[in-house]
Length: 340
Image (cartoon, rainbow, N blue to C red; front, side):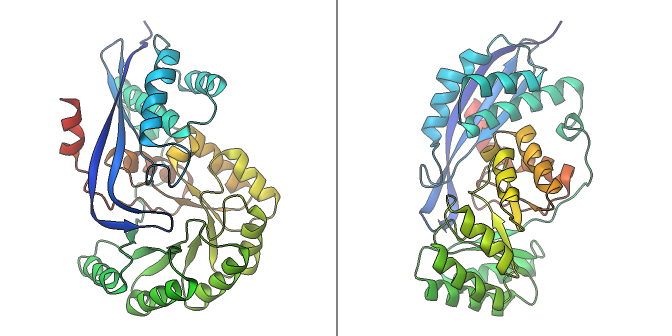
């Protein structure tokens, strides 16, 4: 007898970050995780997570909105449905509910987790099998203080934990951000790859100047330097700047990837499960990008313990360079306590 979706529960879990996490649009001292548990009629449970950044600072879904969508829309839609046909359930969600990719992603990951437990298989096997068994990961240096960021990077290098660092810039004047980045490149760049994330902070003119300067100082990758709405500027930068340009906020779905490729984008696409709507959806984006010769780069939304584990699935299936990173103290005991 086919198991059905019996119950969907969700919790908001506030977890403090280990230090202030400074982005171009907000500074985070706490991260709110949305943890989802799906219980099937056969008693098998699956866990999922939907975590965004800075409330509504990053995108259109806040933790509270995600929780509301799960409770009032997705649960009634899926309750009683066969739990082992992910494609049918995903199609049902997409047909009835527009957007809300973070909430849908939590559902999809929980369904996959439950199915894997029921069959005794890892999620990678459910998605067709892994191509690789490990991924390099980076650490985000985002205190905003140059000396503190260098000290943090030195410590992580000494501990042999990371060999790549991402800097969060864009909140300050261009000249200040460039001085900050150059100092870190000079201090750490001979031992680690340095990348930057601008989080859409620059207009096209500032982006052109800033990206040229960053490339000249040896930065290896520049993430979303311009608005997600300005694909033309993003495409130009990818064609004119030697350093790789990463599309993040500009690309969530497979169609977004198709549009960028059609316009001549030559950089890389960030693969984020929650932003795409789930593991299946992010793999669809990866296939479009690969077909167009666009690079792949795994990214997270500063999740807890659940999200980064699922992020590794696309990386294991499509040979992307990984970036699962955690700046929050998100331990398993913190998550499990929410279910008691």
